Amino acid sequence: MDEIFLLLGTNKFKLRTNLCKALDEIEKHRIKIIRRSKIYKTKPWGNPNQPDFLNMAVEVECSYPPSALLHVLKKIEAKMGRVKTEERWIPRIIDIDILFYGKRIVRTKDLMIPHKEFYHRPFAIKPLADIAPDFIPPHSKKRIKEYLSEIDDEGIEIYCN
Image 1 (cartoon, helix red, strand yellow):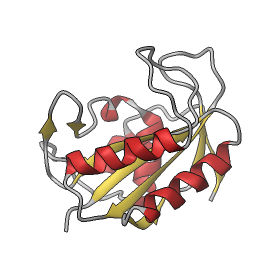
Image 2: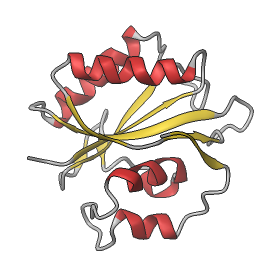
Image 3: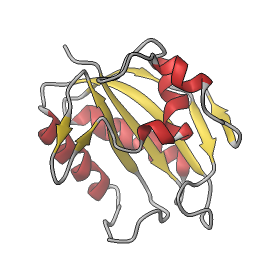
């Protein structure tokens, strides 16, 4: 079975509640959560003029292929009140990204796996290192813990375990 890793983020309304609700919704869609990272409070990326985020990574198991998994996650985001706009880096109730789907590489108009920004985002690397420090991404020879040692994680603090 593929190791599937998701990143959840929120910076609007009741942050911890948003993460908990998203996890519940994920499991309601026959996606089993295997492991969860700590929850981290992180500075916004892309647009610093917005509230801080809570981020966490989860490893999941499911029978959905990548495109179907994306569809389910977008449905969860919409159900929770996320409104998709053309504007990037704005406050959101929930954001659920597929970071990795095993060793698969997916490049479509709607989906890029590995997530195209992963290697530049400390707020994604740090939580993933909690649950998969030895995971080696596709087209890489380095483990996640090695990427973690190379990033500046200033501004990322544990919110709760």
